[in-house]
Length: 428
Image 1 (tube, helix red, strand yellow):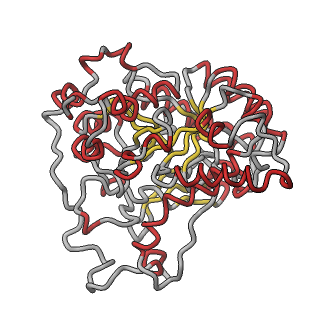
Image 2: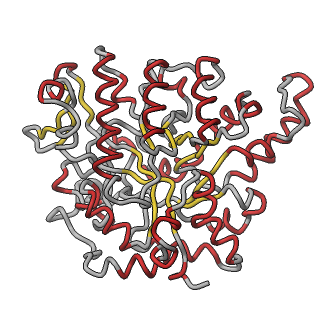
């Protein structure tokens, strides 16, 4: 196989919502009760839920794709400082083509990664209406014109189970293949995944083969070692925090009752998985006599491989040891437009992970596992000859992928030459 022959599907990318996103999906009166994009007197853009006096200041958090690495950070602060592909659907397809990426799962930005910004309003009926409008914008306006390019995933009003089930069924009818769900809802003030309140959702997902997308940080959040610790120490360990949530999800009794209940651990990395599975099995053998978990005749590692998908951006160790993870449960993530993504060199950087790996396993990791897991087939829609890295890049010859400087000088963090600390990033 040549690098150009790969077909690449990402199970973790992000959309930055444009300022006009609600215009076609809420009436004029309803828009008065919905979040509005504003820019304050300091030139910082954020979403302001005026009638609730709430704001989300993550309008462009870490959407630094296409910028010099010296400008990386939690900026940019306004849409004008971001690459157009982050907030414009046609430009986003151009950027996908330029990186040779066929299909993608999109997570939100300003509503936070599982939509919890929409749960916090006191007017619950309005919260539900806004979530529906968000989903309609994403499904119909952003993804709709580009069949085969997106694995449709929707937000749910998880603060209300009746509303959740209504919206879940509505989204399935609209073509949803997955829902965004917290990696640990108990961390967000909701019932834990072990609470029977979720039973109707598990049953529906099992019946319709709908994946639960659990993004890192929607459960356990890695703490900063100290405010004077280098921020790179926090970035280094960030992906592994999802192992804590994975341990709880793996112990869901529902996994034994619903064979089609599937969980995608987004932005998870894979290098930690072999030890995690080894430890889970050791815990079973060493401790199950007294902790008394019923694994229904299986090892925990078997259950994990039947129900979970993990993904990576760049993980040569994990790929070399794919057999200890499970060749059928590894996917790729781009993480566009965040600072960890390798756009526009996605194929080149991904290819470096495949030294000595067979074509069959490469196909599984780059696209087959994800497409099977999400029950999604863009190749049938678009034709295989149009889905390869080479074919997609041929459609993007007009796209400027050169590094674009936004600031006239190096951003304030790091200008003094010392290692940027956690406290500086957090403003402490």
